Length: 223
Image 1 (cartoon, rainbow, N blue to C red):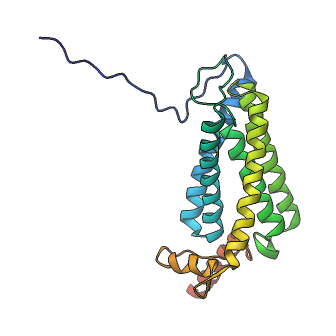
Image 2 (cartoon, rainbow, N blue to C red):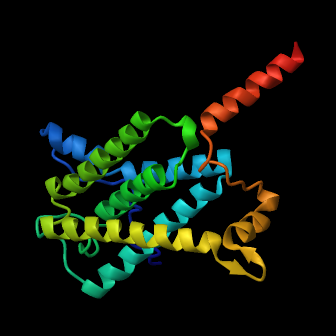
């Protein structure tokens, strides 16, 4: 009696990165390649803990940016560099597009939308912008160093992320104020998210300071 044929196994390679163990920069690049996955955890944690509308909108833009990358790769159909163990198309780089969207959208929120309100000092705003810029560029360059993408694929991906961040930011600004059936987009979003305790306060307040002060008031009431 013949033994049953085993199906071929596949690898779930969300965190699988090839690097040169003898090269410290290669190891650093491998860790940088995992930043987008780490940022998804940050998104999920922030949204769950704060229920902030602006965080939800930024995350929705990030997901739509990934969808745009998915479509572009299958339209362009450009292969990755030859000396590569990975799979899939390489144009444009999804890592570069992900990181540049996050950098520019956060920058626009901090500098144009007053994220954190007046309590967030300017030096902290510019520090966050600078850190996001360094992080996004480092992630993009790491894809070239690890030979997962050509420089052209990374540059195109980075520009695509910047472009989508601008498009999404403008769309959110318009959608917030556009009236449909007597309500603005913001009012509809808060109404639909009422049972999930969605709120819209981070554009005018520093949530960390606000939460700390609220806790202090509660403690004083107990005394």
